[in-house]
Length: 404
Ligand SMILES: *Cc1c(COP(=O)(O)O)cnc(C)c1O
Image (cartoon, rainbow, N blue to C red; front, side, top):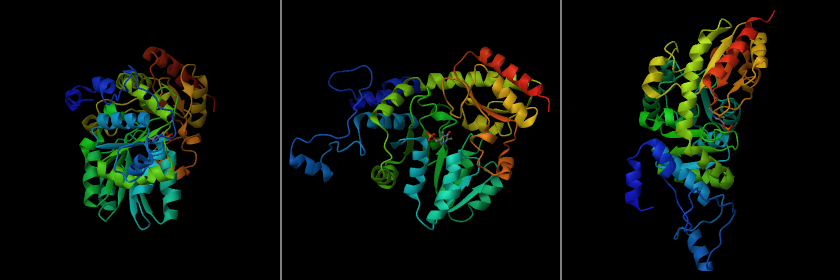
């Protein structure tokens, strides 16, 4: 692509850029992105192979190191995020684990908010300490806790905002300042917000992490992960780790994710629009005792949400009457919303965190995160909003009517 065309595209809006940037067409001029399902690449001569391994010529070596379809996805994600570079991984957890393990060494210290995706919580509490890495988890919504924890040196800070599953919204800019003063690299898992609704690099983050399994695919087909950051950190710190440990995204999955990106903005905005209507409706149902949605004025961190997010997102946490029995009655009554622990899908999905995604946490940890037995996490999809409201209404009624 001539660079003048690239700079023209960079002045376009996101919806346009998602369709036209980093096209990397072959000589056939295909409309859709090409897919290269190949493990290896052939050299014209032994000399060319030697020069490739010496880094003197730009030739693909092996799909664990680079593949045209995967490279196109990385290029398009980097352009979308405004990052210098991107490295994809086989799953979102591949992205979280590679980012941490590539950066940290024995004796280092990580500070993280405690409201995290279940496997990320396991990495920090069970895996890293065994490698001699000190981890400290804190209430990410408490500015004083961050100030205290980052008053001494740390090598990495990791947060999720909005967080899983209770949708705490953390102040990215404030934490970025403290992380940098402590000498830490600041990583933000931006899965719940998506690149459409929140731009952590502009708020001071150094590294952005995605599970592409969620909104980027958004149609429940493939798994994938992405890590974005500076060219120096991605190529010198992250890439050797990812390439040599083999956390590689398949070309086919990369191609599906490229297709997902084409409609990302459209889907995320339609889902957030639905979610706002549904959150309002839920808060009026007698069987619902609490609604947490970052786009509502009664969200505890509404000011931060408005300052750093362009919409309230597609996830809602709500609590129904009558605890676990109420929650189960509600979930079992749903006819349209599926019971599944995925999220960000075109189809609406509900899950009961206390008995599924957050079951491994102690009762005390669940209490601290606000996960009650009646809490339900709802990932709002692309169905008609009124159909979803009707479905949830009879779910909430079922919760209210359980006889304890
Ligand atoms: C799903 C998810 C992950 C992990 O992604 P996988 O693709 O399932 O491995 C990490 N962080 C958050 C916030 C997630 O929602």
